[in-house]
Length: 145
Picture: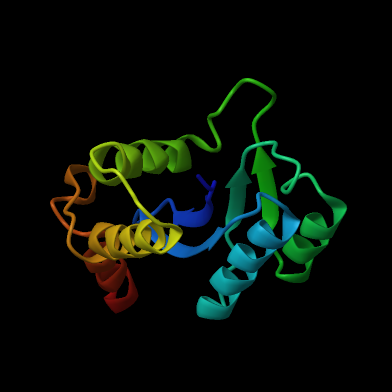
């Protein structure tokens, strides 16, 4: 049995998973790679970056990455997950709709399933709070405006 860790960044406006990385280690490189991937895919974005108080997000190197990109970090105080609530909501949806109902026999199968689910979530899964649109449809409407 192996543990796998998923790091993801969600855009609160359109609920789109902007980037994600899967690793066997829950460490700074996992979060830093996810952040770098998000910046590469959205170089002109300067969002408010909400996170929990995990060691990766309170790390000085991560703070420098945020500053370099012109981003401001937002963290709720301990035991109050207001800032990170939307991301926690996504984790619950992913577990309920993809993970809990299956038994995985290999890391590769789990990774493929996560990748497929995130594609489904972004491109096919409509959301009521987005006006019965998918996250990508909402994002496309924003870009067209």
